[in-house]
Length: 354
Length: 283
View 1 (tube, chains in turn yellow, red):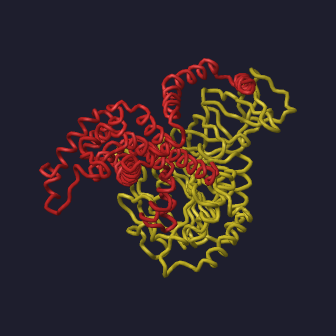
View 2: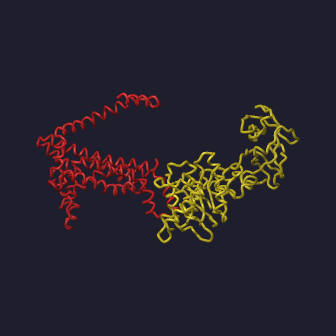
View 3: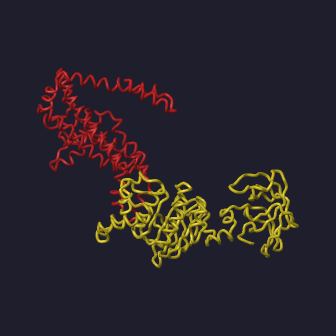
């Protein structure tokens, strides 16, 4: 079932100057797995809750397929919602938690007891928790609880699945395991799924498409490759992956740092100053080249298999971080030639120009 | 004694919180002087009658009737308070409305008011010629000077116990559990019944136990509204006073001991149910 939001706007109850959501239109295709990614306060959770019907927008509409769900209550929308802190019913067993959505149905819609039990066991099996149906949520680990929450949401055969920071409360190892498992589960069940996360690795690894939100607007929506390789705005470039921003100028389609031309193609057209975003692996050091710059090493840190060097670029353009092999004999205070292999230039107050 | 001291040493050694010896000592002295020694003296005094003497007093019709009145009405009043006190706590912690703080403060009045004042005002209002009593008198009902009046007084006295134990629990209920229930298709009523109430049950039971314990021992507010008819609306604490006025100290302590035993058993049962409840939820 396709989800569509059209021009959703929502203001804080207090009436603060900036809206929580500012005209957000989003389309999630049937069977697609879309991540809403953004820093806290970007409105991503509010958007998810509006889709679910837990909150209502000041203006704009939500469609499920062709049906306008805007005026429907959360009960009528038939969405599966998974909360960050699981929100399991502590007084019920795991099995009763999963069966809850079927148990509360009106008599004419409720499946027979045996059928509910069969479904419950089937879902327990799907989330790999067979045999734990008699446990209470208090006796489960965090990862197990989140899987119960997912099984409970799936039990009502939701039209769409919405997850709010589903792995936010789990430790790193469990999070990675569950991520892979959720991807697999999505392929098995094919639910149209939207999840909220502030963890870019999670979004890029898990989602078919990622919507990056900032300040109540969608900055960019696209495949993980698109988002990473072709960030549309300075915010996306700064937020996704590691990047350093350098003061630079664009003149006649060429990029300069302090009068020194870089061997990078820039779009011709407007001239002006702006910021050049470069990722650590897009900078080469130690090769003297005609158009290279001499930069001073400020600090060195060990980072996994490589050494992370913080380098001050001349002309007060800023500092960049790069990854150097541990074999390279670098010392703080030393000057090294650097060369930019790739970079994205944004004119001040404008979107992508390179 | 040896076992106790070795336990205390073990706790002391493993704890980084200082002052264990001092605070435990203080607690024991305090409890002894204020609670245990007086109660012990009471039981000692009553024991001069022997078990059969105690039994004779318990089964004496007037005393038995008074004990039954005290305990049954205290239980009923506590039960009524669970329902209405629960609603009051819910309204006070869930909704914002003008005057909420004032209402919230008013809940504590039964704590603060001298019980005699409460009793006199309740009697005045619920008497057949009183503000409320005159409204229901045409229906052939009478509240003041009947067991119903005792019930009204005990409901009044017990209300803050329920409200103040349940209120913080309602405030800490996580909204997402109720939202989860709604996304699964449950109506408000179903959510309340299956999700909210089970979470509130332990607090409601604690409040029930407190209101009940207070109600059984309540004297000041009840005697003014009860009418104090032997066999009908006479409460056990009043009988104790009557016995004392007749210098029947053994009789008075015997009734007190009986009340102590009954209250203790009922509170023990409530606590056991609570413990069982906690185990059941795996917490």
